[in-house]
Length: 419
Image 1: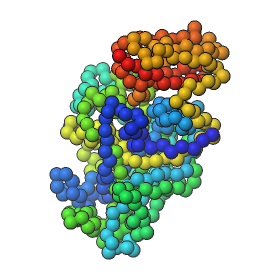
Image 2 (image 1 turned 120 degrees about the horizontal axis):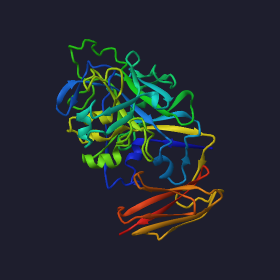
Image 3 (image 1 turned 180 degrees about the horizontal axis):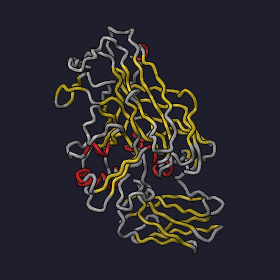
Image 4 (image 1 turned 120 degrees about the vertical axis):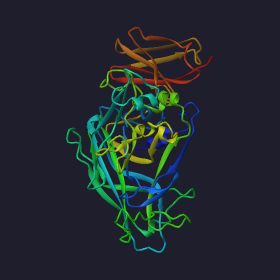
């Protein structure tokens, strides 16, 4: 068994992965419990639209399981549990209102893709697909979950079979005002009311909303009081979640790695290897983006206008502490000799025109795949003779991971391609 923290926002821009030299940044956004308050946006003061943020965790996907040496590996065959969330943000305050107690309202639920899956085709959303360079016959798909307008949290989709969300509150008091790191980031480990159990193969959805405890805030939307002040002193307390985003806006790069949910095949076909359901979401009121009234808005839908480079990939920094009693910890930096696969050799290393991977196994048939550093499977073979040979002349220079799968067991190793 094992315990591991998962945080997709950090995985996106982990220097270990070096996504084609991409760089990322982090910032924070204001979420408020209603739209009455005004916020100082880039274009000036305007009514707040963000009332909640969401995160979907897919801990079984390739990036988590294959790119971090020594970490716990969570396969789709193993159930797991979550007992703690790790929140990253900034808690801004009005020092004159030390008696105010604010609240974070948090929800967590699990299910298969039926937590809520959004799917677009060229006919249903041509502008969205065109923005990502997709055309007729292509499809675009991402995980999502519905919105509870009463509690301002995630809700259960009655058309799905996932679990009902567990909703709980976390109090923010004046004692937490100074609880920040030197870079201003506020980090708290928040224990769930009880251990949240997740069935094998399922993903998790969580939402975070802020509820002001300041009774002096006007309830009349027409008043439009400001949540923040121009002089830097906050009139009302507020909690801002940290959001990670990529710095460049190249749509070709988005399709290459930052769009794990796109594939031009049958709309409901299984996810290709290396792709995943991890997703960052906002809830906006009023729902001004294509009628997202009853659902959180996945980040892929934000960039239909083609203007914001930050919107190509955003994810709140939310950590999930996962425990899996039946999981193992695998060191992917070296070949793992399991009972079914032995004597693995990859040569030449580095390879230029051709790469051969040989092995001995206790079963006749094995599948050998070659994956690049961003989780894309670039070649695969089903072999019976204990050897797979790949033509690498057209592959880009860089580091690759090969995987041999036989009788439910696997062996992995690293190889370089240089031209």
